[in-house]
Length: 175
Image 1 (cartoon, rainbow, N blue to C red):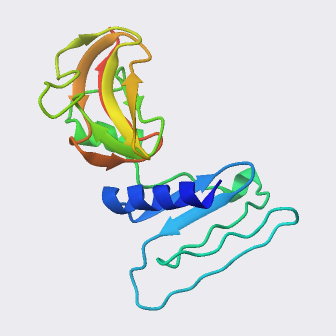
Image 2: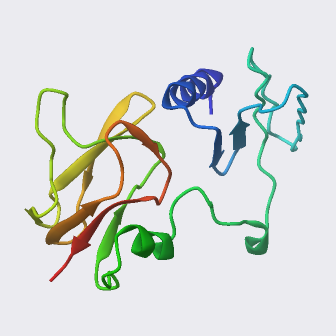
Image 3: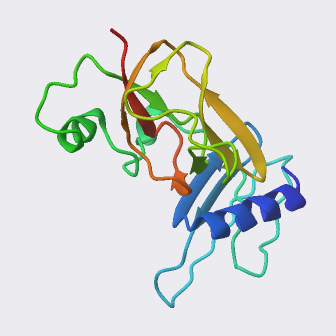
């Protein structure tokens, strides 16, 4: 990952208002966290063959990835769980509904541009492959398509709000 790409990512994160982001590839592990206290701690872990990345003006540092065991990784607690979705969508049984989830971190948009109507609304019948929203990531606009046909039951995200990877965006009734 180039420094310019990291800086673009930092700009995007600042504009999206996110407090914490983790990005991991084969070559690098990047963890960005907003400072909530006046005391700042930084650490750089060097890995053979991978050059260290300098910190920028915000004090953020890129950390080359280290091998981790599957038990060392924990799921993100920022996106709602299926249980939280059931609770937030009312008392009726939602177990037969399917969630359309975000494939990336970014900003959720329900319409292709501010002047247009939304891609989908509650009650709309959708088909597999139909665009349901846009997620902006690093100044790229990515259309998100439905993975299966059904009826939109609920939109779980507000327009222009940040979303996490694997966060449920819509509930659909596949029946």
